[in-house]
Image 1: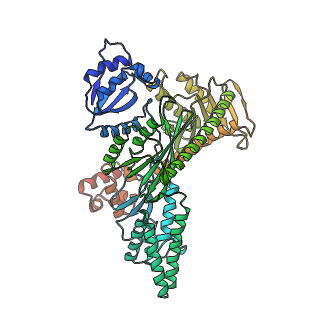
Image 2: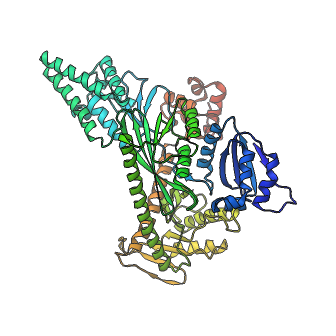
Length: 627
């Protein structure tokens, strides 16, 4: 990485930074990053020759307004050289998705894609949903746009190929067929109702189906059914008939398929009101694996649909294997370069194509309609959300419409496993990436006021330490807590101590009978008040409060479950998961380990004399017990 910044005597302006950096910039391909005075990345770009590309930014009069603002804010430039422009494009997409620069087109999507997994390392392979890293000994098919789409495929595989979905631990302990066998969705290999060879044939057919060879399978099943009927094996013929019907049903219910194309993605863009939505349809083996809308963040002007779609493709396939064919709604700039970069990632040829007629064009048009409708729904929701936030502004006498509302709640059982939580709401709905959990450390058990004080002290104490001038985004326009006058008083005291009295505080308390719709709102210097039960603003505030309650309850339950499964062996120095497993297998329980003598411990497999002494001393040092 090369680093350049102007000499101290140079005027502090973005243009001066770039002009001073130019002599030291390479002419090779690579990626450049524009940074502001605080070190935050403003923009990430790729170039065939970095120096020539950065030179174009010094011609400020020729730049669109968006890039003029970017140049004005630039205080430093960093570059990374690559072997080719295609590699620079891949790196650029990765950095944009990871750093989310303000002046780039950013795909804000942190969801992983579900896949269908077939375990190949078992005599009777299992089919299951899978997310995350792939493991050896399994085949993967996908991606699917949603869990619903992969569930539909699994149901089809059960109905047509009778494959098991149960875990290996369940499979190994069965002594009679389960309900899935009774409803003809499993061949019951767990109790040997089918041989390993015949089950393997079903698995092979299922993989053919996932590869798009449905007609071949259907013809073979039809021939087997006729042969079984001729041999008077009517039960087998009926079973084959049901499987053929299942395949026919799958083909009939799939609303849109891509004939003559095995693996492909359809990517269509619609832009309106300064916002963009890209709809992606995933086709694998000619089958529609579902579709998903993506909403992009970018400047509301100076950006063409072609530029948006080109930037989107790199980020889409940053963590997703590209298919051999990508059908597009618009011609993208640098299409050959993007195709080359995706081919490097896929280790095979990738074609970008904008169809003009025929079935492929019809499918792209269908995806465009979906993109337009998804964006229209989002814009309508944004309008309704804006109206609700304006209602919140009027209700609590806020100076402006709130862009960030933070809601806090606590949860514990008899003072144990106490947690606090913060959720965030705003114009875009719930901002789940901004949610925070707080394990209560200092407040006394059962002290709700103390717990709320601790949560607010930690949240805003850290915020002040990181941003004492309060110039960065992330500060709330309204803080709401689940509680009454007592909680409000505790929080008010904390905020006054921190010098944050200007942040509006509201406590929302349930009514006498804890009925929804009868909540009381408490604010400092104002009488407690209620809203009409059918008020939409009340319903919105209830949703915020309920979301905070849901999140903190989930956090509490996860912490409690973890504490319940914690073993006293976890605190023994030198005892890791493998040694712990050996000890528990040998002595039966942690209590058995604690009561064992040093000699008995040393006799445990994998436990030497030194570790046995350390374990024994951990439990008995200072107790007066002898070995």
